[in-house]
Length: 522
Image (tube, rainbow, N blue to C red):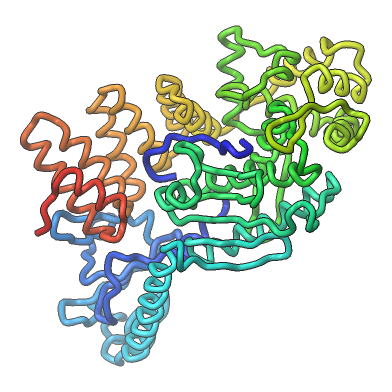
């Protein structure tokens, strides 16, 4: 949404950047010396701990307030040392290698001294890297990098930001080719993009209204604001595509504000784009499965938004985004309709013959009558009836193929406060085979809001099973148990909250929650 931003539920932690993100996320739990046990997860992250124990079908990491078990299915490699720091051979062949002074290390056998040196160098670099990241998480110490079209100011890892920089440059190129836009001194030149490492930093610095998880400020000085959510990179990327589209559309005519059905419909259309960081390629025009789920529900309930009614809405809300996306998507992806629609879109903002009206300070827009009249002229329509009929049939033919679509619909319902729908959508996503920690976490919060404590607790437990090193999930579960009347539950809740602080002692959200519960330091 323009300067209002995309909305999402404000509480809790926020598509294809997982590999880069994983490589940049280093465990802050413990960066021990060369005698520490090492475990590498399949998502690329390395963790060094004082001691890791091999257990049935996994690895156990002991903390003061409980153990964390990592299943084999998540582990790529693990090197476990004896209490003396020596590797314990599993069979005679390994004993022979150990006798020669060799130790296993990341899939091969090398000299112990070489292993120790590699680990020490790695840990030294990791400590320096983490210290640097912590320093730059203060906005006054933020990183600043320029690309051909953007100035990035950010507190996220430089590796993660590099992928977003590549994405946004590719996005600019694709849109500029289709719509003929360019940056000039008159429209502000390079755009400042502010990228924050977490939600609280984003709200504190950006000035974005609570609930707006992406924010384009279209008055001078122009700014794009986002925060990075490791637990759901898909959503972070989709929000970026949506909000950046408002900026790209702004370049067509900085003094013009499109009617909501065009502005949000176009942003939603590009919001379904996919970025491949390996190939550095961008696909646009994909189906917004989350919006399709919402439309399927609407049609099943006999709720159909008339086309002209949509064109006359002054402020989009909730389901309007789904209808707006579907209409613009149909126009953009139909070879017969795309050409005249693109000409109409640009014409509305640039042609002096279009009758415009004032919109705020120094801006203009078009009244609904003018927008409808111009649309019918460019699309060669006597009335909107025929294209409306084609649109509704198009919507009816859309299909949802994945649990991800229902998860996205759940996110949509959650951000608009439609809790019953959100619960239904998240449960359907799970039934369709989507096993994702963030889905269970959001479902858990919703269930607790509905006073379904047992179900909520079970959802948090399933989220932890999928992400056993996500400290916030332990805090969620701990909070849920702590609020029960049972003394045993309250005691277990406090233990889990303390465990969360052990896993990630640097998380400000966890420290805040601990302070609310008055958890005394031990």
